[in-house]
Amino acid sequence: MPILADLSEIRVGASPRGRLEAVAAGGERVVHAKDLGPDGDIDTDRLTRVMDRFGETAPRLRPGDVLLQSRGVSYPVGLATEGASGAVPVSPLCLIRPDSTQLDGAFLVLFLAHPRTQQRLRAQAAGTHVPELTREAIANIEIPLPALRRQREIAALGHMIRREQELLQRLTAAQDSLLFGLIEQSAKAPGGAPTPPGDRRSAGAPTPAGRPATPLAKGHHDGDHNR
Image 1 (tube, rainbow, N blue to C red):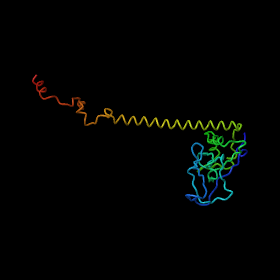
Image 2: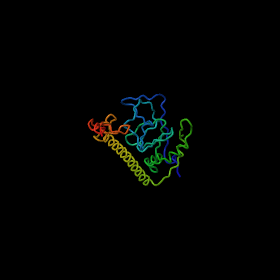
Image 3: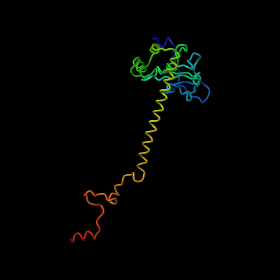
């Protein structure tokens, strides 16, 4: 089975010497680990712009590149689109540039994000406080490699499955909200609210002694006594 190093170029993210200060315009866009979305995307609309501190040798994204977070207890991934072109990934991100004649970027994202692959990555991470994947460990990841056309078909299927799961989660949330709304409305509707404790006597509820809460009319009481 081929390894990732045989199918792609692997580079570690840039490591700025100082603190990155955001600017409103100009500078360079950077990609942080927080910019990787849950569906294997990169949130390009919220990328931070910083003053230019990167040289010509800094890694810059191209469409089809894959980013992998290399530090932590999980390892999110993201696929670069046209909107991410030129952005600089910073540590702890690792840039993986697949050989487009052998490996599809979307397929690689699907493979790396799969729970079984994530489990293997956790087993290979070094360190106890903050586990980290070394570049060597990433380079030696074994990848099942179907034909390129088949890779794209599998990636498209994976996208459809993720979309279906997202819609089901939204549907479940909407159903829960609807049910809770009905519960609240029924409690406020006439006849739906419980009788307040102060109204028990007027409603004819039995007293704690088991006697009627409403006293008998005086005339009836006297007549019964005379008999």
